[in-house]
Length: 397
Ligand code: PLP
Image 1: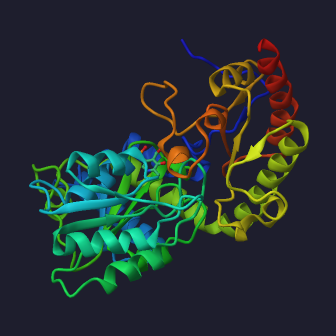
Image 2: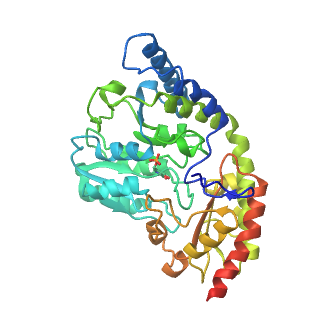
Image 3: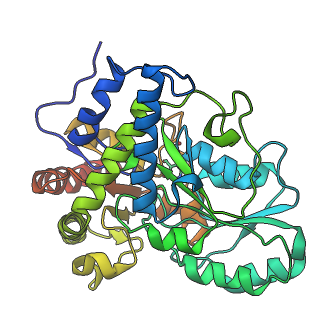
């Protein structure tokens, strides 16, 4: 049975996933049909698959500003993060560090390996003094420093250059401490060549930018050693065993091509939609707080705001987000309270805690996220539905 959405609905949960871009679907289709070869073989069908994967690798590497040989295809952002932090199997010795606002794919891996968490400021940007203090304390024991390129709940863009500078300044040590960045949320919006230039390890995921789910990549810059996380047939130059998802990789490349091609226009258009949504909610919902967007300035400034164009994070006093999301869904508006998690259960957000949002305010957190196919109609419906839903939740008392 399909749970089909109603005729009129607004997907304001693009940070969770996006619709497949038509270019990706078109590019993938032959590889789900007649071009089904396994690139590990030697015959014609296999060589056809090798060629397709090589071509996709070259295009993706070009967009990311790395060599094709520095790209390791993975099953998505989670695997890339786990691989980067652990350093593979066996894990890289030492203590991993990450910021307090990382996605669980990073944070939980760091904690599982006995790592330490770097404080952040009230927008979620790394406290560079705390990072320096941890590097002073742990010295050569630090195995990796991981700071995300942009946050998946608030959309705040990190200062990776500054983080890398602090790490490099602490480094008479050889081999040097790798800097990792989770660029999964940044990839649909920002030119990742800057992140790739600053970091040693970079994670990306196709399904956040109009590609298929279950495929992503870890950029491993030359000179950085990682052991394989998955051992087996030696695919991906023995860095990631397992038969590659050829159709997925081809779709990833096509989606990234399309993303890069329309990026300037998409950023401008979606930032304007997001700013209209933020300003509209601020005007219509008494007490609503824009969590990281400035009240006047950033509704309007979009690209220069230090926040991804697609994300509008708000906190609504005297409302619990679960009830609000339930009512909004009934009227066709789909959003999220925090980041998506496997159980679908609402957990309190470690990100909001880390940036000092009051717990009672955080109970009414709402992440509204737009994507490449968002439209004025989505914002119109959200502005129609959400203020009324807040009023109803508040009336329950
Ligand atoms: N990192 C961030 C910042 C994310 O937002 C996500 C997905 O929500 C992931 C990692 C995990 O990526 P994937 O869903 O491809 O495993």
